[in-house]
Every structure is written in C-alpha cells, then in structure tokens.
Image (cartoon, rainbow, N blue to C red; front, side, top):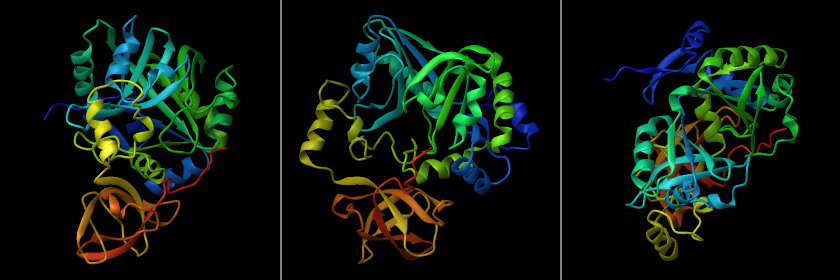
Length: 366
C-alpha cells in the first residue's frame, strides 16, 4: 500500500483530537467529536472542514476554453470572470470520469477543482485531450482548501476580509486579501446546502488562515468538522458523491445531471448521450425516505411490492436533521416517480420507503 499523503495541517487535526482515517489516498479527519454534533453545528451555526485533499488544475492560454468545452458536459462559454460552474467529464463509454467545478479567472485562465480520489485519473484525462496546446498546471499539492459552512459563516468570516461577503452570490468567487494573506480565492460554494464559503490558500499560509478563522468564528460556536458529517450533510441535499452515486458506468443523464449536460455544443461522447436522452432512460438516480425504521446503506437492494429487485442503494444514512433513514439509489425508470412506494432490503427485511423529490432537507441558508 502506498504511503498516505498528508494535508498541510495534518498535525493540527491530530492535536485537536481528530480521528484520522485513510480517504482517497490521504490521512484525513473523519470526526473530532461526534458526527451528529458536527452535523448540527453546520446546519445551525458554522463549521470548518479541511478539504485540502481536493485537486486543483489551472488551464491557461488561447485554447483553454476550447479544451474545457470539449471535455465537459456543461457550457463553460457562459462563464464570466468570477463565476463558478458545476460540470462533469463524460467518458467514451457513456459514464462519468469525474464531477468538478470550473472557475473562470479571466478569458484565458480557468481552474478546475476535482475529487481527491481522481486527481491522477483526471490529470491524465485532461492531458490526453489537450491536443491544441492549452497550458496545464497541477497545483493540487500546493493548495489548502477550507470549507467554512453554515448560516453564521458570513458573520464569522467578515472580519477577516474587506470583501462584502453578504453581497457574494452563490457560485461566484473573488481573489482578495483574507486573514492577512494576499490573493486568496474566496468562493461562495460548498457541499452542505447550509451556505458558506470555500477558501483556497497556499500551503505556506494554511496555518495562519485556519487559526484566524477559528478565532473569528469562536463567538459563533465554530467547530472543526470531519468527513463523517460532510457525508450526512451532502446526502441531506441529495448531492452526488463520485464513486457512489455517479461512476465510470453511470451516465450524467441517469445520475440526474441532465441540467449540466448541454447539447448546444459537441463534447466527449455527446452523440451517445443525446441518443440516450431521445430514446429514454432505463434507470434513474432517485432519492427516497424510509417509512419504517431502518438505515439504508450502499449496495442494499431496492425492491417493488412483489419483492422483485428494481434497483440498488448508492448512498444512505440516518438523517440527523429529519431523524429518519434517507438514501439515493438507481431504480428502473418506471419506479422513479415521487411518492412511489418501494422497499429497501435491510438485513433480510423488506422495509417500506417512498421516492421523494430532492433535496431531502429544504433549508435555505441565511
């Protein structure tokens, strides 16, 4: 087994008493106190995640946009300076290489933010398709990323920057001084549905920025948050996790990502996906809520009323906010309508559940 990589603040997390686990090739904090306590801290107040394991690639030059357009499903031509876009890399087989964020700094400079487990795969993919000579730089190992999430995130972070955070619209970013560090990327994005920001900073300044965020957030009850609560928070919003809900063998359309699949342009395997859309899908990713007590888990079977297997759970948990089991899974399309009754096979018992519209938690961040 390869030696685990460490984020810049690995020792800080250890000193805070975090339980460290291997995740996507990194030694990462899974929790500091309890998943439940950390989950509620983000939903109700503010929390800080160290997600420095994520990958960042810079794409520059006259061919930058052309490359991004050819290998992503969304229309990056619609981006203007300071805007962020959710997208994905489709593969040649109808599946997904990865989902990602596209940041536009200026006309010929972009940043792609990819999943930690896919950094090398995505870097190779990007280079394979870079036939027109865009300038590529992998800055993943040089950048720390902190996600400060929750309804009190603006109030906690505002003393650290002259940027008016309350005026920043969702999925926009700016580059400015933050916590005494110049040229920090302050991004109004996140993976929790609780509102907040993601802060990209060079590793050399990571400790200073972390400490100042913790100090500024102290009066708002800020807590460090691990990967355990990150997973329950994203699942309550119905956000896909690569490797679980979307994979190399699930299409963006099947995974509920038709909204980022734009056929107004040509991209990798777009004719196949266009045909799939026209013919109709045979399976779809859906959200479901348990109607009986039980916690759904990945790979549990989804059944119909007669006990026939109609799909499989991809993500599941006990929702801390709703106090009931929730999950995502693929089902045969005819069973994908909201309020449809399904059954989840939990420890050899068929427990009632129903299809629901996402997100599970209808929370608007303040």
